[in-house]
Length: 432
Image 1: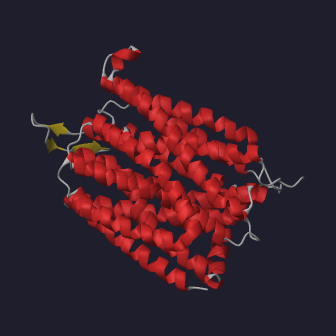
Image 2: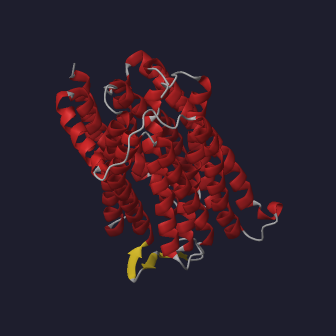
């Protein structure tokens, strides 16, 4: 079979477009629309708007609604952490990355659309739909990320990675603005009420995700090699994961970076998933203000991604990631003490700026440190599992503290994660 031509403009652009396709999940479902809608549909408030009852019945169990949300996310990422080595092993051996990526895209988009049927009386549907969307989103990224070193040369990693995130932020902001107009002015769209508009917004996310992804599927190479599936293939993913783990023993810089990335993920990804819920529950912010806040985060994230890429070329990837942990620590301290809505906007702006840069730079740094003589999907699977286990633990700890205390105390745990990440990044700088 012919070798993939690297640095092909059409292939690279099509790869970056997928960020635009699936970023609507992280923006609309995981961040801006679903969390506050879920909270409002499962909480009872008094005339002043304060929560007087926030428990839900979930298969006979009574749980705090925000804690259930956090536990569900943690469970979803645990599932994908278990599945990803199996799937990436199959993809790497059969060369069938694109087909597996399609499976998760369609799983995620259909799950998003299913949230249309959530009306507050069926939290089980909401939780499982949300989990399915999360698994689809994360699963597709296992295969999406592994394409990066196959379609471009190392000198373009940071630029292409940043372009993908920028396209993702820009495209998802466009859809969010449309959905915000629909939620705020449902009569403009022939919709009777705001709740129905929110549920229709979930449908638009599913259609957008699956539809835009067709551009990526049409132009990404389907395979780099073909091998037949054997009866032992399901275990090959874990075998490859084990091999990568042993290989890291002689790659101290990459090993140290992954440890830092583990704790960074515990904090950063948890912030992303609970930010809107924090604003709704702790700050009592209306949905419209939360959507505007998320729009602010996305718009600031675009220059943030390019700033960190530029600064990394000047100062180095690891020092810039280390610098970001100091900013995250400051964010956590600020979030614990804020009481006014304008303070939440300020925190959100800083979150957006640093999050856009750190996400793109983290992926590019791992790719740069990676020994590309090995099967890329196996290493990216290890990277993905590292991130997902970090998220599992981060969300679980956050949920447990939230369940017994409040989301403000949970934020302090995130600060500890960022401190540990900073220590490991500092140690990585010392490794030659």
